[in-house]
Length: 128
Length: 497
Image (cartoon, rainbow over all chains, first blue to last red; front, top):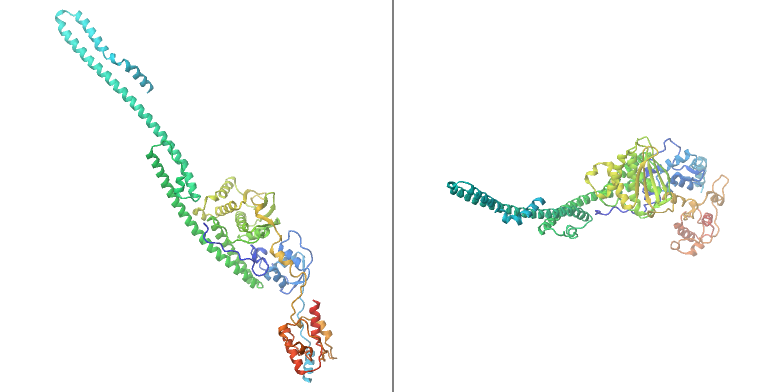
């Protein structure tokens, strides 16, 4: 009686995230696409958990807590969980608000060398 | 009639002499009168008496004959009446038989039998006239054929519906996958990401509608799952398919997984119940969703704080749930709530879910859907795939593939390279070094050339595949072999890892 076969589910997609799960991303963040108030989080902000995942916690939160026993950047969490960065940042905002994770400023970008040093290099090269 | 019958019986044996009595009496009285009257009148009286006796005798005889005729007629009519009554009774029995046989045959037809098969399964009636039996069969046949044609028509309409639903499902499925990819791609741009989520949600709603139509067309709902899915993810999957998913509070969820084939029906049934709950409760109230372990399985509870159901509405809803087996009525497709409950009923029937609607403590409705034990397994990872995946990679450092000296920590480099007084790295001659053990075999032209390596140091290309060039250069310059401090350091780190 069934006319044609339904589209079959093609195993897991790329990554190990919720790609293959029945839920969609908007449910994971309860419909938020960004943090309610701007929290200083960018892709390279380092996240460290300050506690252990509690029972009854949303699995994504628990996963982030477990993952961040060592400092991880937001973009790394996004890669490991397979969730987009915006989703991760919403989840992290929840955790930051609950005091369960701590954010650390990213490692500062490499400073430009001292102009004097560059001059010295130039001189040295000319002498060769 | 009985009285008439007895009266005829009484009259019949005595009827032969009876008609003689009146003329005999008249004859007697005529004789008496003849004796009494004077002589000159005697002739006239005798004539009159004779004529009267004759007339009376004739009349009496005629009366008796008619009486007999009447009796015979009565007898015949009574027999006729009895016969008619017998026939009537037979006909009534036939009608009763028709009333019994017709629904049975129609039911058999609906189970998929052909009209001929349904007819042949009937026992012929006993004692009825052959033409009556024939007429009976003809009525049955024509009705069954009409029903069969109607069934066929409905079947093809249903197939058409399912077909359309399948196509919509396929498009929605593709769309969802594309959207997920786009969400990954634009995950860093909140504006685009938000719009994508919005589209994703709309697509999921379309998908649910297509699934509903497919289910009502007696087909399976959407996609099929190969692996077991944790209950938590199933419930969130159900949440992602309704309009007002933000109003749903997902509380404690039993740590079970649902076996693959039952995942999609369960998601869909819960989604329909959630949709009803959010649709018929005030928009500012919350809807509570839990899944608890029970003796017979897992009970998924959906409680809303709406106005609740009156007894009449509840019985109507339960009827809608129970009637689901009766098939798709295309007229029902217009009415959303009945559509939802019919879908739930259909899914429950196919998968042994039980659904009950009771008044909730919050004042609304408490819908409980019980999933039987045989559709559940123990979940390997309670939180779902994401929780499992997340524990894997970063906890223990893995040996990284050697990518070249850029991996070398800065301190080691600094220690190895002596500095001049102005802080610049100072070039120095290299000592002999053993050929690096972990070279790609094909890339090295001759190990002996590398053994005689000379000033490769700073000019050495930093990456592994370029090392043959260093060996070549050292061979050409033919300087004494020197160690490459950078490579030393590199090997030390790569071994240390």
